[in-house]
Image 1 (tube, rainbow, N blue to C red):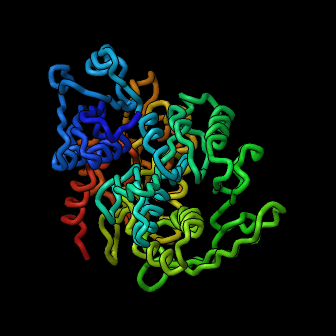
Image 2 (cartoon, helix red, strand yellow):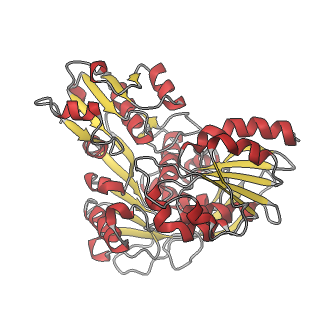
Image 3 (cartoon, rainbow, N blue to C red):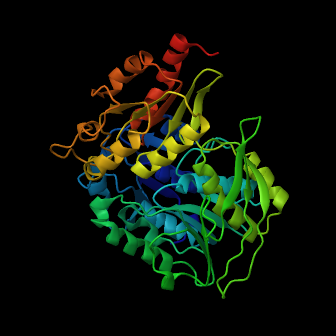
Length: 469
């Protein structure tokens, strides 16, 4: 499908972070874009300011006429009135977001970032490093870049490069055929789709098969994938494991509270690989030691694309991060508040390790809003194990996202395993007042749901009660 020739495109669930990036792409092409979402948010308000017409009532009479394409998110219920109506219109393509992203990315060089966590950070970081060096790629980011205040970046139409997140949910990433791919992790998740780890690994193997045989795969060291499916050019990476092709050493924090680290020289012993030197001494201004690991594939791709060491250094140093990824909401000499999107046990583990490394011997209180009933049911013990590493854990009600409630599944499944909690499950309306009464040096707010709505109220209340010094 030639999207550039379209005149009117409609989005069902336009306010989703992945959907909104594609909506912005079509808007960039000069196409009339409109859509529906059930909730007005800061993101949908911004989309409206950019000229995208949005309504918030499920009403077929509000759908524009003469549509040429409908894009929908899997989060839209199949009995949604608009979804049902649009599917009955003859000769009107109604396509999943993943299918549309796959079609878009075929129009140029595709760099796909996949894995259970880290996708958004790597996508955003790589986009910024390339852009700061004058390589303007199209980027579809699963979060809001702090540098650019958007989740979509427009690129060079003459020699387009597309940097996209390859989402494993619903096997969406099978729609992509990348020239360069990254796999960060394969953790138990989306088991409502895959049933077990074997099913998840098979799906990643299929994604690997889609990589151009002459392309490049950069994969986290130790992942259980089928190496026979790899393209001829591949590299493994790890934060510190020196058996990986790429790793780092000499991590330290400088006087400006920035990470400094050295990339270790690539000395692969595989007979089919040439040795490629990659020794660099770099600065990363964003928090979280796990973000140093996220920087490794970024550095490798930037080198492959011809960036100089100075361009890589400058790009990483000026990268300000992503909203809700180890984002400092308050930071002063006495205490701080960090907001993060972590919603899987491994993401919580990485987040908590980074906080404890950054603030040793400080009292840490972590607010966690579980995301999805199925994920809470399947991973309750793992969530509790992660949360047990902080001084105090505060649990909120489960954010359902696309799911209906599951009988017997509540946040209590997690608190039952915890000793470092008051045992109460807090609603959104209760949380701010509860946190103001607690004692801590570091407050971390984590979750992928609407806990983000509470960040500003929490900030204001805490500054009043604890002060800004």
